[in-house]
Image (tube, rainbow, N blue to C red; front, side):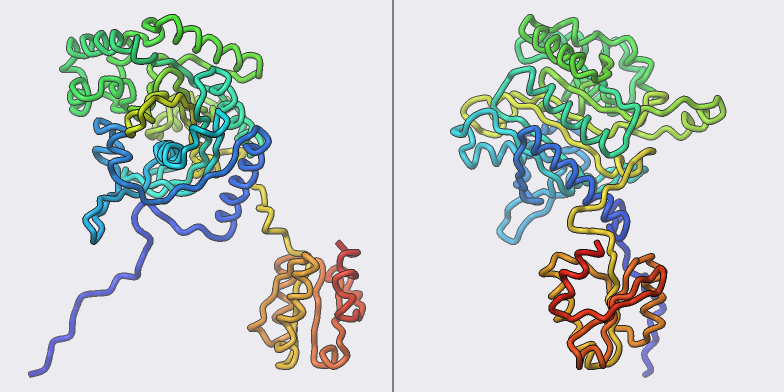
Length: 450
């Protein structure tokens, strides 16, 4: 009996939803921003750290908090063959604190200042500037409760964003107090929301019971009117928290950093205490029609006429203890959303140091020249001279056409005669003048052209 052919149409493989391939200009934009930000961080005294992409799930349920959207809805978790529960890191702060504790950094001179960059993973609705695989640049200062640490963190991030070309930056900032004064605020906040229980969304009705501060982070339009009249956290601050917040604002003023106190700002993670902030890329002045269009297309993370959030962070003095450390470790940190930075108006791409716009295109003709090609390229590499090439091509005209299309100033041509003579031809692509150069002198000759 003849078998029926399958009618199932094979679908071409694609990247998972909310994730993407980075290549070409996008890759260089990301790498260039990371390199420049790392350089700035180093000047401000930060040192690099890289944590695993996978961590024990408990690290995030204990540190980030079980009542948060990240833990309840957004984590990518898996079970290993050995029965361990691991999670793709949704944020970078808890892993850095874990590393600080695990490697005994408490015994190092305090504070410990660290920076990192790489992918984070959250299962949320993909939209402009918000992907399931997002890339972040983070800064953490661990081991000090001093307000100047908060200011250093904000200043370093502002410098990185400004040097990336972002303009009209502003800091939205608030203080949510500490365990000595936050209790009274939470009680009044819950009491207020219970009076308006029928005016809020389903998620907020649950947050009243599990995580009251997250009520202020709700983006549901139904809850916005209720949020406008909530008790203000700064009114409940104890004297030490009040003094700390006052000092942070004074530092920002001295540094010339524009800020606005946002009474509804709490951030979405349980570990924050005292200072919380976001850096906003504000929209430029718009005509009425443009303004209306922008408001109609406002997405989560964007606030009408405030702008796009490109960075967020705050102080997390109680995180270490929640992870099992014997005592609290005062700390403050932030993360820059690099996806949003690179798509922001005004972003200025910086070529990574490892990538230099090529000035030389290597052309080979004939099999004997192909055999010699990699040796010539190695001579140039040792002289720190990068080249582009198409070693798979055979035609001179095809290789010259690529060099012209890429607007590369010089071509290095190796034919069979040059192989015999131990030379190459260096051609000026602009005026077509050329010169024959011995291979052993090629590096020195080219350096003069640069």
